[in-house]
Length: 502
Image (cartoon, rainbow, N blue to C red; front, top):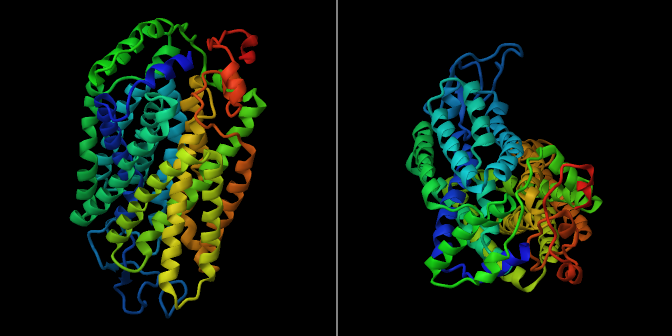
């Protein structure tokens, strides 16, 4: 069946009217996700302060005349800042905790959003998560208590992640040969989201106003119920053939092409039985091959989030204008995506991923040893390191989804991404390593990239293989001859113990 769907989707151009419209909608979703994931960098920005009591030195939390006397009243350079309004002087851990909590919430949320997307569908999950993200984001702007803000930050990240279901829809709505191109073009929304975030933070410096401006538009995701279609692949595996065919015919009409009626008639599938998420995972994990891939994917995701987020977060600490610096770091994703597109069309994903991990490792490991009088060289290495991290983050995103079967694809992708978010949880704390050695953060970034690159040799390359529907098909990924000779497999999961044979 999956080859028949691929055959039908191959008739469509990603630059046709239907897919261009979907690409614009994906841009908006990814753009909002980029803003929501990183707005804490500007909201909870560091602010200088000093004690009102002259017995205390600048930025010191204890009196110079006593080791037990603490300052009780502070003067902040920006009294309207997040740090000032919540009284976070001498509590730096509370400021950085905002980013850590967001990443932790995102990690927990992926365990919820993935299964929700596989059960409710990509379309409904996009609408639900998009709107909830906006609601919790706006609610944070009215918070008068620090811990209430932290709770809302967690909830927004946990159940307001539109990225996961939108991503799966973008790779399921196109054929295998157009999958990479469509995904890369859609993810330019991330870049423009970062630029828009920087511009909005500059235009609305008061953090409460800033949050309302960037989150309020998310309520418009309600209209995605009427302007976006469900994934035909998901509909077919749920036994909803008529709806899937209707969407394919609608797309064909918009693109002014004709689909082969005989192929449409062959799209037969039985309705998937209602099986618990745990049992679905059990089916997948009974395969030693897929279990090994799963652990490798966690390493990929941990490294990608740790290095990419770490470099992005620390960009506002570089010399110069923090808004421009952040925008420049985001702009690096544009050449990164273009190079990825060209590279993956010419080289295999596996070796492109290995190369980006290893080159990124070399750049990060060498940066701490650059001469201190060559600051420009250090900056170049920093930007190049960010470029490499964008390479392997993007490749990891699409590579992970191609290694698992349809009925658990979103769940496995979300699970890998979720557990891998330990990297983004740790990333906001990496500046603390500089107390031991200024080059330690870069050295750690490089070491993790090196390990991830070496372990990638253990997975197969997916090439242009069609997305697998079953465990058997997923195990055959990368084995071109076997993949071509394998007859269509019924991917219905029976409720008896023989379901492991799939």
